[in-house]
Image (cartoon, rainbow, N blue to C red; front, side, top):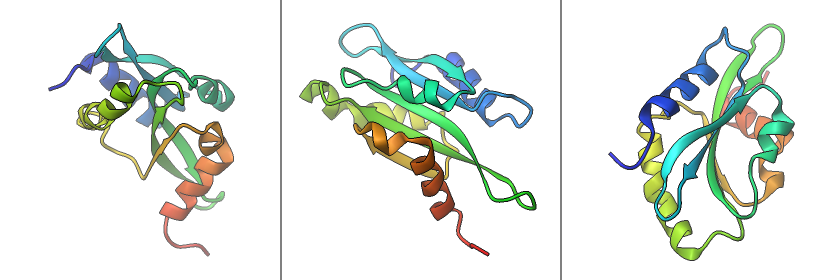
Length: 139
């Protein structure tokens, strides 16, 4: 297994997935220089705070719960976001596919996956639309 703080990542992942928790998102970042270990950075329920966690100078992962449907059929969908900021070095960009594979061994349940360096791509409305598209039938 790669460099992942398994316990911290699992706890944050399960908290987002827990229907009785108010936690809607978790962010995972790399600690230390060089390779770094993927660790749980932060969690919360405010989507604007979630979106602010991704900057041009870093790479990170986000896991977010999105509720779709109407009053009759609300559904929780989960989204995995891979963030690679514009100012990330080429070597670290190249490592992201391997690092993502290590994270996905733990964070395995999601309906939508987004890889981006554009803040607009992780806007709450854009992410919700991606979940609706992935949901199938529209009545």
